[in-house]
Image (cartoon, rainbow, N blue to C red):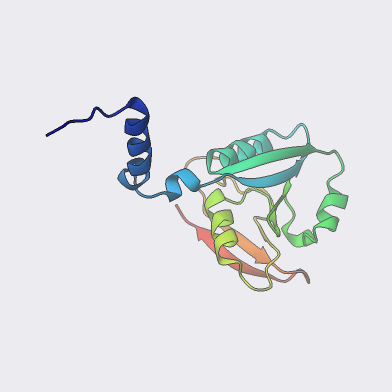
Length: 157
């Protein structure tokens, strides 16, 4: 019987081959951050907090500071009734305001027909980036190219 010593390289190759399975699947290693462009006023602190929320939840954020937000909202067909402090573009969708990262991920996964974006009108106190406690419920709306809105998600706690 002969025994062969395992080289460091062979050992490393074995570990790397087994690691994805041991850690719950290869998706853990393959998950790339999703790029998102955010248009916001350079002086808005709550927008910066929302950017941090998105970065912490799997997005790679590129910030475009602008004092002129109206033309940006018009370009991306954000209905006036749902406007908020910042506008983001991710994939083929628009995200208006402090929409939670989880809702954006659901939008990207489900790709609902006719929807061009999600919005939280105004600036709800407990939405990501605002973070007021105790929690105050808020609603996320979807909208289409004609400006028609529908309830997309309700956050109650």
